[in-house]
Length: 170
Image (cartoon, rainbow, N blue to C red; front, side, top):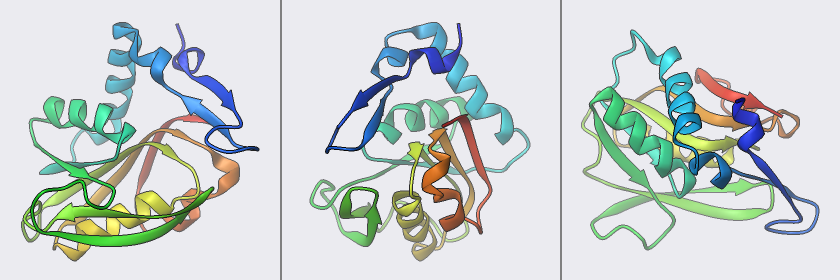
């Protein structure tokens, strides 16, 4: 069983011309989910990580599993208006629009080592915004982690100053 066999292409979602990579078939299979988690963890061995910042919403899925496996805290990085306490915000462009992310101002202590995780690296705008939020709070991004990377969108270029791990490449 290969991980990529459990990623479904959904054409013209969320808008015409986009091929959405749907991971819900993967999530239905506990053996494949465990295989993904192990492959996400492998390149992190030997790194000091204090927290995992998971990007809304699909970055929460494996982000939380990573935090549990690494025995560290989890930080939700969310869309505007979803976090209840004081936040800071960072705007960004994505492949089909414009948005922003928020993080609680007390989520990261000065000098903490943070793994930024999301399901897909596409244009890199979302992950870059999350990394900037981490750094604005005094954290250090030790790695950016992704289940998959859409290489032709060149998101890796936006994240050039960070080390990047991705399991699947399209």
